Image (cartoon, rainbow, N blue to C red; front, top):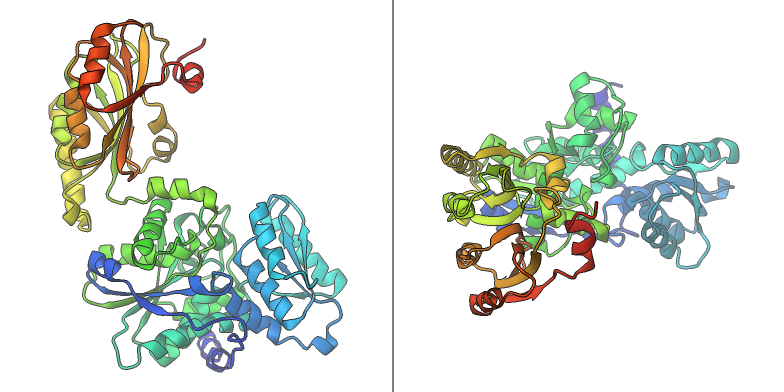
Length: 523
């Protein structure tokens, strides 16, 4: 049987899949903000609303419901630290099948407890922590299959798992009977959901495209389809950990290689932006892997100039680790560009710099005085173009280049670090390094955030004292906060008068232990 016939053979398996004892038929929700943003009719398939907050319950339950419990002596085993583990745990309790779920030792306690809680204290689910990596945990699960005669519940490379995920495609087409449906975007890790949806949609409605989306640092399906065979990745990134798979499935590759129309990869910033965009419409915070389809849809639309079509993106999971929210927030604004600038250490240089960037919205401005004999190093982030033009990537890029050229004409050295991980994660927080300065006092200022608020604040700092440190970051709060270092005598009545008449709320932070131990050198 060739691969095409094998893929077509999934139609019956999908239509007869047993999923709805555990899963729900999720909403195909119109996304008005995304639709306007992308100039297409965008629909979200809300798999994040499943009982375990991801699509994985479909495949896990369908696979486990096929087990003949009369002939099963030792139960099942699965290896997962995430959504698949939750799907297996809930299915085990509902079907009353003993299950051991192997997780790496370093799995966060919140994930271990979420799986344990799904057992409901009935004793059907046992968690085994083993190994330092997923691969070591997977080896232990395989050992238990061979030596303890347990049944492996694979997260993706199993026909019944694939068929269970394929019911998502059934629901999508049922919701769009007699209505346009041009492209379905599906996240891809091992390929189970992508294979299942493609197997059904390409048989029933072949004119609808099915496009898989992978994280750029875990693009196993993309590499395998390009090579014409399964490719083992040397390593995978872990930001979208729900889709971080070194080797895609043999069965999933066979189906996807035959039926999937295209693959697209997205980076971490694009994933974070997709989380933000989805939140605007669905009021849900998707996990990184759960936002892959939205990120891929946005990139595909922009690269291929797609408009006025009906697009579906699977919002596949919402088991977000709370600790990642800060990173997501920092990286979610796709209109933000960052530059490292070298300017002369002379009075008025700040204003000259800002006057060139104005009226664009500055979201971060970081400076630290090092020496009067050396140029000043500044980290700045801003949003090119007016807000209503941010969806037009080419215009934003053109405007960014204009700012860069204007700064260089002024004699400033400019380096684009918008896509530099080191700069964005670390350097932005200590532009200029540390300095041991005499007579430096530190002040935290607050002002209501509004267009031009930072500009007004900079103009208000018209004083004779030297500004030795300046850091501002727009976090979307109602109030902006600026940290400013000023070289001045400890007791200076003129400075006190200046601060009192400045018109901004402020607190002095010179005695703050963090300032003493980090911002000031103690060497």
